[in-house]
Structures are given as structure tokens and as C-alpha cells.
Image 1 (cartoon, one colour):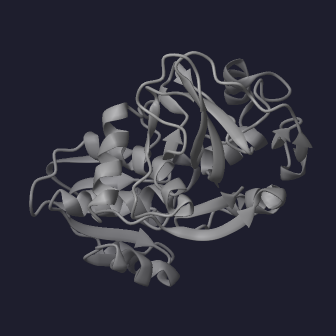
Image 2 (cartoon, one colour; image 1 turned 60 degrees about the horizontal axis):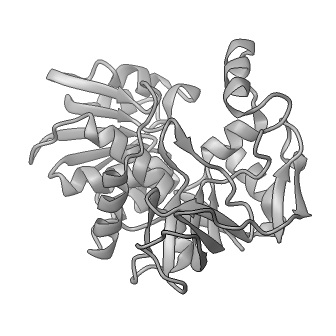
Amino acid sequence: MKAVQCLKYGNAENLVLTEIEKPTPKNNEVLIKIHATSVTTSDVLIRALDESPVSRFILQMIFGFGKPRNPILGMVTAGVVVEKGKGVEKFEIGDEVFAYGSVSPMKRQWGSYAEYICLPEDWNLALKPANLSYEEAAAIPYGGLLASHLIKKTNIKKGDKVLIYGASGSIGTMAIQLAKNAGAVVTSVCSSKNFNLVTSLGSDKVLNYKDPKAVEQLETYDYVLDAVGNSKSSELKEMSKNALAPNGKYISIDDGTPLTPKDAFMNLKKLAEQGKIQPVIDRMYPLDEIVEAHQYVEQGHKRGNVIITV
């Protein structure tokens, strides 16, 4: 099968399209023929490993020294079950599915930059929402699960004011929709070119982080959700940390290890089927243009998700 392997950490050019043997499902696993996957910010971080010496060492302890222990990156899958291992009961050959290769910090599997992948049936794997294409389904798990992690740290009630910093990315676009579903009044922070996007997703107000006068437009919020983490900042972001109502909370995606439990994954599936969340796709690339896709994501200005068609 065709697969993209990361030969060593560093530039996107280290991602190389190769031919390797198709995997065989073990007991309780299914073999999925992949139709679409996603290039996430986490994929780019692991591939580049452009971190401080201490962080780089810790990450290499987790993922492998010199190059990823599993050279095929990618954790998002949308495709068709083509083979079953012994004991599989939840899926049948021909089922259209989508998946995320992480259930917990100890149960994690890369490998979706390829034509096929094997996944345990009880992981974050479910029938694809029938109202979504493979590409749209692949745009849900990463941002949706990380946004769910942020929202779970809140107790949003109807009418609560929520500010989302980094609202136009894969996490932010989902956080807007999840917060609105919970009844929040949402203010989205992004660049002005993305105002129409975040408004279409339900944002009640918008702030341009590049506008020096935006700080003056800050209100007081019950929750400030930072969807970009420590890698990006601005005067507006720093001031938003103090723009809190009594008992208000500032919550960053970099606070602790994000959890991706099965119940959160299944909730995203339900909300997608009900039309209560909409996946956002910025660009799509074929598998053999994975280098270009990584280079685009690395610029840090994508809107929603970048999808790879297989």
C-alpha cells in the first residue's frame, strides 16, 4: 500500500511517499481503507519537533529518538471497513466509519497517512454520520475532541458570556459551536478575514486580535477559552486573561494533557448527525501532496481543517 513516512524530524520534506505492506487486523481490530485524513497542528508539531531542548527530549521519549517510532503520522481516519479480525462484533465489512487514533494518553496510535489502517473496534471508532462526506467526517475528530476537552472544564449556562481566542482554527471553530449548543453568548477572536466564518458558526460578537483598539472592546466573561495555547499570543490575549467576571475562568488548551474519551467522540458523532456542528474545511490535498499540506498548516493561519484525500 502507499503510505507517507516521516524519515526524520525536521522539515516537511522529510515526509516521503513509500510503498509498504498492507497491515492485517489482529483480534478485535478492523482494517479500514482510508478515504480521507487530516493534517493537524499536532502532526506538524511532532514532525518538526522544533521545541526547546527539554521539551524535545521529552517528546522523543514518547515518540522515538531521531525519527518517529511509528514513521507513519496521522491520527484521523475516515473510510470503509474492508476486513475484520477475530472477535469483532460492532462493525461489518462495508461499513463507512470515521475514527481518531487516541482514546487516552496510554492508548494512542498514529498511521492514517496511508491507504489502510488497523484500529481496535472499541477505540474512538464509529459509523460515519450519513449526512457527511468522508472529507467532512475527517474534519471532526481532532478539533472536536480538543474543543470538547475545553468545554468540559466549564459549566456553561444559558446566557454565559464566553470569549474564544483562536476561533477560526480547527479547535476554535468547534468550540464556538459547542459553546453555542450549551447556551453561551460567544465572542470570537480571530483576524478580520475570518469574521464571516465565525459568525456563520454562531458567534455573537467578533474581535480582531490585530486591531490595537480591540482591547478596549473587551467585556467581562464567564469563560475565556484559549484554543491556540502558548504558541501564540498578543496584547489582546494577555488582557483577556483578566477580563473575567467574578468566579470567571481562563482555560488554555495547553493546560494539562487533553483527554479524548469515547463518550466525547460519540457525542460529536451525534451532534454532527443532528446538524448541530458543522465541520470546516480550509483546503484539501491528495496524499502525494502531503509536504505542501504540512507547509501550509505550519504557517499557522488555516481556517478549520486541512484534509488529505487518499
